[in-house]
Length: 579
DNA sequence: ATTGAAATAT
DNA sequence: TATATTTCAA
Picture (cartoon, rainbow, N blue to C red):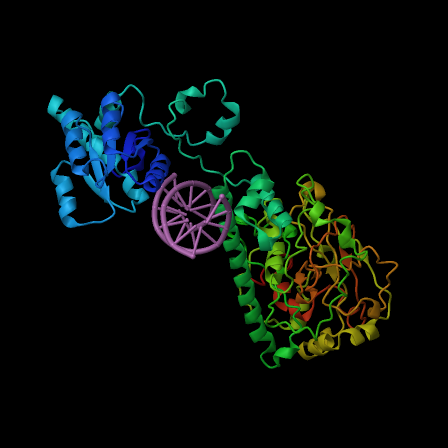
């Protein structure tokens, strides 16, 4: 009942701790303070007695070690019981039964063994409670009130001061800076106040994310984050807790993706060797729970999620990454030096994995990006969609054409949406040849999957969402092309596409359905920092085979079968398809 | 002193 | 249940 009820916890009970071991004294003091007791310490039994005599009625309970150099602990116990009738708790390093018994017999109300647990200390108020209860009953014989009430009255009668002060749930933190005038009400008596719960608002989380990204995921620590966030009142523990949750979240995402990838691999390539994997897999990100609940049906704003490639399946031979830009070179990434990023520029600080060990932390950085999209509060939840529940089997490619997104739905834009309409730069015509040269494996794979689809990859938009982008920055884009052979080899018009041809890192290719591919071949890139790139879509190929016949087909690679069959747009276009 | 993990609490 | 806090051991 009330004894264990936290609401009955009496803050501010005055405890005298007696122990000749200064270390223990310190530990106990700290723990007791944490339990919101008022603590006085002393290292000698005789001194303790003296203090108690001098400050009669200034203590509610005594905790004393049994072994004291100057006086036998039991003697002290006896004297205290005799002179001031305070509840005394004995403690010792050993739990010898006879001693414990002796302690209890001599009037100890409890016997604690070192090391003393927080929980035990937290509960010692109950002894005061019991004692008081006893007194109250003796005096009034009144037991009609509920225990708690009696306790409160009784203990408060002990002393004028309220002993049950606790924090008002909401404003402990605010109080810090705003409550200057009547700050005495509950803080003057030094009673510890219960910590207010920190609510990780979107704003706060954004700060957190920014800090994490600035520090670098590999060396984040609660302390550093706390410092960077510079939020008054926020504690390291708060940050640590949040970081814990954050990491949990990221690993969950990663796991989901891996599972999905594995599943897709089994389904799509069971007949092929692993080397045929083009590691251009995509899938929708699972909804991060509440973030998107209620948004699944806000169709047009749905943004397909990034996929994390499975490193194990990754076959670097089949995908030719962009050349790794020299860090000291003139790559765009130099434009924003993560080192120089300050909190004043929340946007620029988002991707700064510069010093992240490339291969080890790839997953993390990828996940980071995921996180940025889905976890960051700045991203409208509606851009995410729920992973459809329907079967994940591959649909027949041709059969799927009918439900492929219409061109104008290629880049669904919501008002205030993170992604602005993407200017599309068409590549020079007649690149099929080059495409084949570039990506023979891809072609082969595509052919094997569906001959009709060969070379129908029309437009690949590179896009990488920026976690820190707020609505006002909705045009900010990260763009890059990767997973494809060197762009130059493709006869890609460098001049015309200069803005989008980022020699970048951590970029992703998004197909028309806004799928983002994160590629493992990007290893070596760290620190995405191309902001302000206005283009977010690049028409890489114009392999004209089937495009004419299938005008509605945009950016649906073989790998998108699953995806395209799962997009909301498709559901909209063909409502019955996934009913 | 810090940290991550686990136990707890709300 | 999810999320925040606290404890605890490394």
